Amino acid sequence: DEEDLLYRIVQESITNAISHGNASNINIEIKRSEDNMLTIEIKDNGSGSIYFEKGFGLTHMEERLNMLGGSLYIDGSDGFTVRAQMPIRWGAREN
Image (cartoon, rainbow, N blue to C red; front, side, top):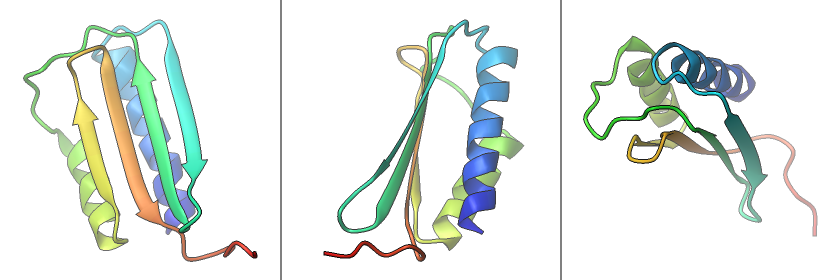
């Protein structure tokens, strides 16, 4: 579930950046914290918008993240940023 969701988040964010924001640069950053929390952030340099409505893609992302114990943050004030966080159930870190 997590792997599919990560793929869909990146896919939807890139599609939105190109289709709606006319972005020419998209940065994707993936981090794993010590407490097995995964954060993925997709930020573009597109037109952005502080007023936007969540369409099907963003709504679906948020619903799936919530089902997995995660959360979604969206900011359109400087380009567009999508940040998703969720706990990782596999690959526990060893000390």
